[in-house]
Image (cartoon, rainbow over all chains, first blue to last red; front, side, top):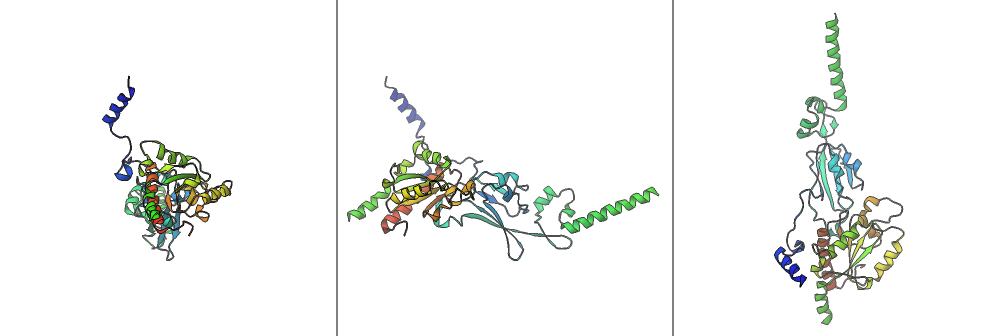
Length: 175
Length: 152
């Protein structure tokens, strides 16, 4: 008898099921994948994010004076798959849970995350190498931190010197 | 006088029209969700989906504009009366999304249709679509006051 009464009482008790979004803030899950964000102090310019980006949203542009690279994610091409964040070896790219991305048509081509990443320099000869932030040296270059800061040429030289000195010792031992 | 009054109250009840320009159905599902599921309920803004382009005020375009539907989409778009506001839903209409550089795809869509509001995402969250519709409403209100046409 009168089954709608049951529904009415239930709805009165539970309150409205509509999300109050445009008029009040709403709930966003913490792991929701929204806009990508780059921490330029963590980036080592390995380029794996550009390589794995299925939608081709990530671009690197070299600065004219050769002092660094400009990292750019065009949000209007990004499919928010999160592969760039997954494969980033230094966790420089992060998917934020910001989804407030609707914007006017005029700025659809400028709607991008643009960050400038400075290149590093070799600790010995001063040649331009990939950036080597301190946080990354601890992670990727923990075994030989001083060798991690060198350019490939200086690195080869130090390795050769190292190997040669060890060989000399061995030769002396054999005698 | 009457015209002015109508232009003032018209933005309270925009009629939405979904234009599928070769979409993968992801955005279309989200657009349907926005109106049909009580949790999101875009009809709180006075919106209503209509079946005929001649009744529409805000056009929601999804999909990368494939060559197969291009002429049909343009024909339907021209049937929508001015002032109309176009909302591009998802990554596809702007950049082609994952279909970018395909020979069957004619994105970016703004070579053919002027775009007023963009909601990126693949597909966008229903909340983001509601946000975009709210933005489109503002633009439509301004256009009604000024009496401008979206092509001009």
